[in-house]
Amino acid sequence: MNNNTSLLPHLPVAHLLTQGTSGLGLLGSKCSQCGEMYFPATDSCTACCGSDLAPCDIGNQGRLWSWTVQAFMPKSPYNSGETEEAFQPYGVGYVQMPSGVKVESRLTTADPAELAIGMPMALCLVRYGQRVDGQPLQTFAFAPTIEIEGDL
Amino acid sequence: MEDIAIIGIGMHSFGRTDGLSGQAQGAFAVREALRDAGVKWEQVGVAYGGSQDAGNADALANHLGLTGIPFVNVANGCATGGSALASVVSAIRSGMAEIGLAVGFDKHPRGAFNPQPADWGLEDWYGETGLMLTTQFFALKTQRYLHEHGIAEESLVHVAQRAFRNGALTPHAWRRRELSFEEIAESMAVNLPLRKYMFCNPAEGGAALVLCRASQAHKYSDTPIIVRAAVMRTRHHGSFEVFSPGLAARQAPAPTVTASRAAYESAGVGPEDIDVIQLQDTDSGSELIHLAENGFCEHGEQGLLLRSGATDIAGRLPVNTDGGCLANGEPVGASGLRQVIEVCTQLRRQAGARQVPGAPRLGYTHVYGAPGVSAVTILEAP
Image (cartoon, rainbow over all chains, first blue to last red; front, side, top):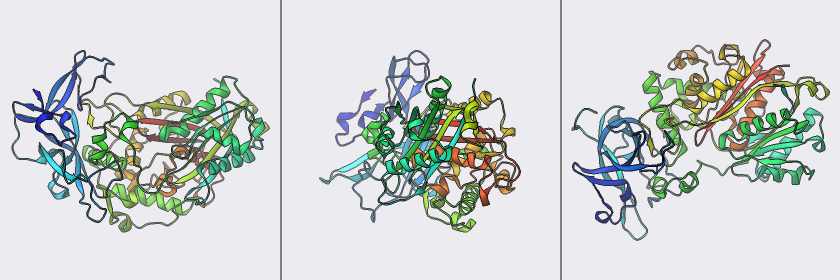
């Protein structure tokens, strides 16, 4: 497991990601005392009050646990650079990962007809806006998928 | 434990009052409550209060008089009013003062709240990428809840319909127009499954209570309301709370459940004994969830309950008789005390067109908010 920061120079969420054997994954942490897993990584366990946690790979596939569509443009600190007029609604959901941890994420579709609780989802990167200097702004997201490894 | 009573209630109408600061609205509410109790500000021996966006409560002393009393600022988000009330009850019970004041007020900018990640211990990316919105959280929680318990989306409409129907009967409510099923169901999608008329709006207003020992209450009031329970609780590991980039694998009951149980235990009553109810309805989905979390029905029973009219003013479980947050808006600091004032008004049988029939004896109020706090009170008629 390598921290991927150097591969993704313009990605503010690079520190949340890891390059595992099955590709890009989410970087979390696991409590060495009680085994509870967290995303994003943390140094405090809110389950057993421990403070000894080690990095772990949360994975890159899961099932949609809940979803909504963000229909209005968020106020600052949202930084997509869009105008109110040009704002494009986006999907948001929680994806349940193999460990049971649910990860909040943008979704690649904002069409309610394409979203259903329980459907398989895969991690990807999406462009969600651009900076003042024209550089694209990217973040992690989940996309509906038909392939899913193992039994989630 | 010695009983504590509410002897004065006062409000500044919720909604929008241009040109009047949040603190001035809070001071107005305090004066109304003092007048209701027949008590002078100089007689108040301890005060707790707060706002989210309108400054410190102890600055109200600049409006009311600098009498030197301990005036504690409370900052517990949506539970600010409930925390202030619980603190005043404890202070009076401890002998700290004979008469105490709980006050909440606020004045929020228009539109959705825009919290800053660092204030909540989160990193900037969470806000920058568009995940840090309260409306989004309520929608995600509602969507999951409807799915888990097989509740139809029409129940969300029924909650809002009843709120605006009750608001229309409430002279001081902000939203006083009844809305049809279609108007609500076809209103603009905000965060599906929640639509425009299923969300309350941040607003302005003030609310205050004057309290003393129940044994002394007859000196001030013909209609003292006994505080049978006033408790506040915070979240446990595994509860589904706002501003959570990740949720734990295991799920724990919400802070509402623990606050509610503690309140029933403290009062020695159960949900079946309650005659009039206030539940946090930041949105239709939250009220649905809170009906079950506070013990008024099983999870999944809400659809039938709403369709049958059980939660209407004349029903078995009258909920949010003044239209709740949906019809009154939510000035965060004041909202929990608005609930207490409405229940006091019902228990005094002074609620006019929205009065619950018969002689309601026990009332219940519940607030819930970020980052996972809940406050519950159980109140008893004189």
